[in-house]
Image (tube, rainbow, N blue to C red):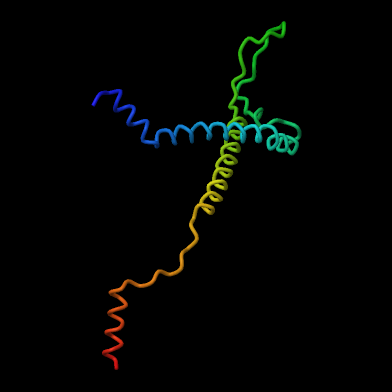
Length: 135
């Protein structure tokens, strides 16, 4: 089998196409949730912290050095943990929303439990024999 034929078979299986669609939809969904976090959640947190954006939170190790004219000679050295916290909040919200969507999907997908199936014929026959022997 040629390389192109194998590739066509691989792509035509369906799993690859389903995976590709899932990745594209997941990326778009991630953008939606990120926009929600950046536009709604983080401003509320910023208001609670006195108007300072969480992304701007940092620990300055060495402040920027300026010369006499006010030009920056050496850049500031800082640990910017605020952006990390914002990314963690974004991830937690995305994971929670995906969890809720999958939970609802699984609930809809679960078939209604069928009534108890009748016992097999051999079990019925054995029960009849047992009942006959008891008499």
